[in-house]
Length: 265
Image 1: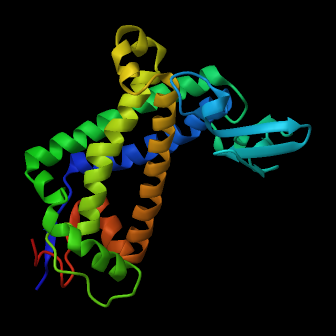
Image 2 (image 1 turned 60 degrees about the horizontal axis):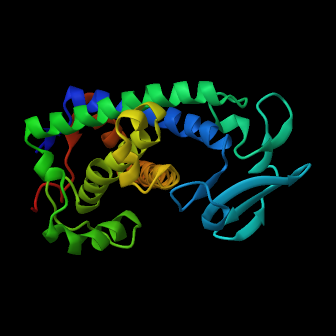
């Protein structure tokens, strides 16, 4: 019996792939912006006494990274790195990972702001499309899913032969969709708006809500790290749990259910 279901509609698939591209550009251009002020402070304004992270070049040819007061030598990786123009210099993140590769704050902001709106539209399209289709509720984590989180993770890690019974989406997928789609992504969007000088001028209370520009910058960077973590875990799950089936479903919309898929709440 063929248990193939139409899981992802066209809007969802387009939003997914455009969001992936936008996210990669946002990370790269965001690191370009970070290079202009390579530190994060847990304060309402710049304060070395409340510094959480800093990436510096204290001497010619030396790069260091300081996290919560602990300093590590990171020459060649962070602090003293590729300058994007065929040489090396005091620069937080290397040119090969930033857009543009050479240090240019203005261009970095242009890339970042444009793709921030692209990513936001994709997120809203996914949210509205899922709600209209009626499967948004199926994607949200329920209290009954919590006991199944570890058994599902054990299955992914090959520590368990069978996954726990679940519905259209397994408990880890629900946890990811709930946390990323409804918590972390809105946080990144709102803190990004709080950091925008234009938005700050007309919506100052938003910046104040996050504790000031430096705190908003800290939350924005932390949200980016969480999104990168989700991206890495999501890629791992796709690669280890039926790569062809998973990729086909996000290209054509059609997903072939496994033996234990769709047999639980």
